[in-house]
Each structure stands twice: as C-alpha cells, then as structure tokens.
Image (tube, rainbow, N blue to C red; front, top):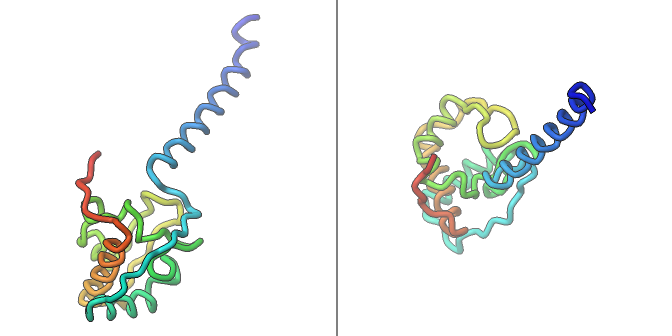
Length: 144
C-alpha cells in the first residue's frame, strides 16, 4: 500500500485518539457539564451564612443549583475546582461584579450580577465556604 491509501486510516486513528484525549482530560480535570452533586448541608449556619444562603437562593441557585449543587445551566460550586486555593474569594467577587468567561465547564459565560451588592457577595461566599467545608472541600494550593 502506498501513502495515499494509508491517509484515511491515519486520519481515523488520529480522530479517535483526539476524542479519547478529550474524554480523559475531562475526567482528570473533574469537569463535566452534567455534574449535579449531592450536597451535605451544615447542621447549623452562622448568621452571615444564613443570609448568604437566602441571597444565593434568590440570585444564584437558578444556574448553580440548590445549595450550590449545580444544574443543567451552571456548575456546582460545592466542587473541588472551587476550593479556596484554586478560586479564592476574590474570584467570586470578580465573577459577580464583572462576569466570567467559561473556563472549567462548558455552560457558557456567566454574566455580571449587578443586583448583588459587594456585601451580599461576601455573605454568599461565607455560605459557599461553609458548605464546602462541610463537604470536605478545603484549601488546596493551586498547581499549574
């Protein structure tokens, strides 16, 4: 067989390997657009977390799911990708204020949320961090 007869086979193998690479990458990075997780809620929330929970439910849950568990519209925030070492509190402030371009998930870009004040954002972050802690999500230094 000459090279021109081998090209279709080479292309098919290349496409298959590329597809396998995408699947493996998604598995290793923990990203999946269908991730809706079981969230264990703390038995007691602080006053700030209670307020943050209410604000989250009113402004964030439509996309990020009840208690940050994720939905078909947005990723779960009770996920190790959002541990404080990878997405610090400032990342949440920036996302609420400026929106954020999709980078871990394929849900699309998050628009700014101008109706949520900076003070409200701090309470939302407190709620998210308390629920993350209850679910074993703690600070892990980000490694590139």
